[in-house]
Length: 204
Image (cartoon, rainbow, N blue to C red; front, side, top):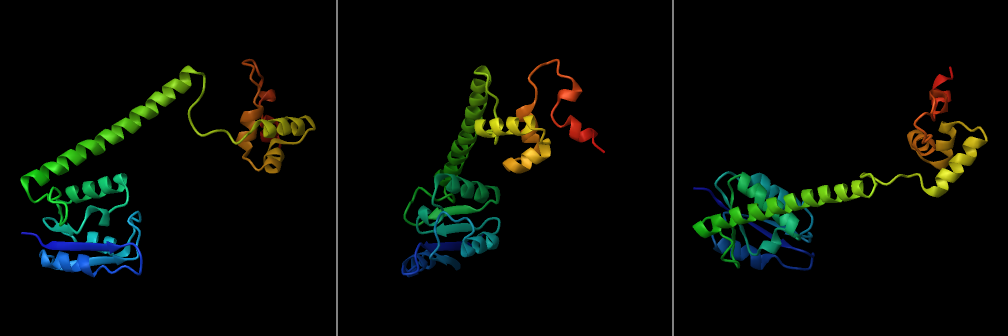
């Protein structure tokens, strides 16, 4: 039989966590970790990290409300996933449905896991659909180029004046490869001598 471990949190220094702490201890918590003046969106809250480190397989994490744990749906799902993987139960004093020590509560973990996986699958599918749409429209996925039309025009002018690619890159504040790609000849029959950077590479 695992231990009941409580976690309390208040968002500002002028708030009193005493009510939560008392309720958790009255419910049987043998130890209560309290973050005072910490945002729920911070995953690195000192006492929350200490609480996670203290929890062991078979323990039950006790909170006054779920919003004491996380400030976003994604963060909450991550916490649920970690607790489930570590075989740690979760119970909320003010939300009776959140009690994974009961059969209905255990089913709750399964439902959460399904929704979490659905969210991941949806993001992946949206990404694939977006890339397919981009390819169909002749666009290439990935990060946008740093070579704006203005930079390309200036690079062409400097190159026309005989400036080496590396000096052009330094003047524009971009990488040598970015300049090379922007000025690369588009003809399929371009000779090696015409390719960007070829002269610099041959220089001793």
